[in-house]
Each structure stands twice: as C-alpha cells, then as structure tokens.
Image 1 (tube, rainbow, N blue to C red):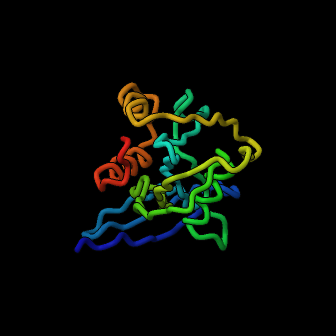
Image 2 (tube, rainbow, N blue to C red; image 1 turned 45 degrees about the vertical axis):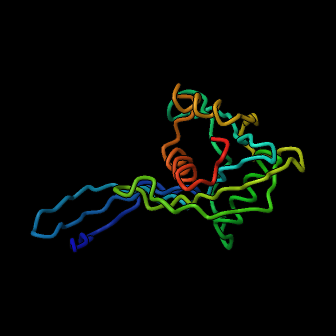
Image 3 (tube, rainbow, N blue to C red; image 1 turned 90 degrees about the horizontal axis):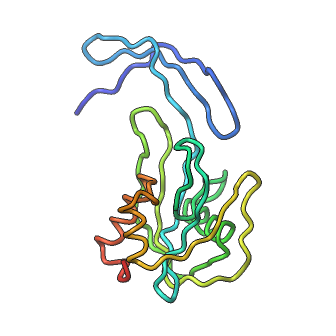
Length: 183
C-alpha cells in the first residue's frame, strides 16, 4: 500500500459557501516536499440518470461557463447538510425537471477529480419516471428540460453535446448493467 502524504502546514486561500481553495505544504513518502499543493473542497453531489415510462431520457440543457457553452446533463446538485445522496438526486430531479420516480437504483459513488478535489459524486438510476410538476430551478440556474430517445442521447454523446465526464461514466455503467433497455 502506498503511504499517504504528510501535511506540514495548510492554509485557505479562498472560502465560499460552495467551495474552498486550500494550499497544503506536503511531504511525500521518501522525503520530497511540495510546498504549494492546491486542494479544492467541494460538497458531494448526486445525479439521476432518469428514464421515463415511455423510455425517453430526462435531461437538462444549460450553459456551462467553465467550458463556455451549453451542455446536456442529467439532473444533479449538491448534497445539502442532513440529506442523503439519494434524497438529493430525488430532489434535484423534481426541482430541475418536474419529474419523479418510485423506482430508484444506486449506481455508484465516484471521485470526480481525486488528485485535487475532496468531493464525491453519487449516481442513481430513476426508472419509469413521470412528470408530476413544473420545474423549479434554483436562483442562478437557467435550465431547459429535454427528453431524448436512447439513439438521440447516443448521438448527443458522439457529437459532444453531452460531455460531463462523471455523468458519462454513470450512463455507460447503467447501460452495461442492463438498466437502460432503450439506450
């Protein structure tokens, strides 16, 4: 087993309610030291790979400033304090799309960027979903709900319209496990 790094000192360069940037001075096993190793602390988040009763995928399209363009994604959001990741996935699906499901399957927990980020992404599959409400996105979210057939979603992945790495991994895992018959 590889030994963990030793933190010699640590200081915050930036602290906000949704993320913090920390600078650690670390010593690696064997002696080398890195005086400025940066770590981003984010909350955990959860997403819902959602399929309707008719076999369509429920997605949201939104602008993503980091990549400078819009992206198709599954409903997702930060896990609130006292909330389980599954509760988050259910809440985000309803808030962002107006869809709900009674059939939820845990898929995985993945570290989006384990080298420098502290958070985990929890993925679920929501089957036989139905629209039960109007979407109620959070302040600062401009979302458009999109229903895509399996072939249309595959085309979006192939053409670069769906690029979220962790969500792509969840989609492929769900498909590989036979959970998405229309994909």
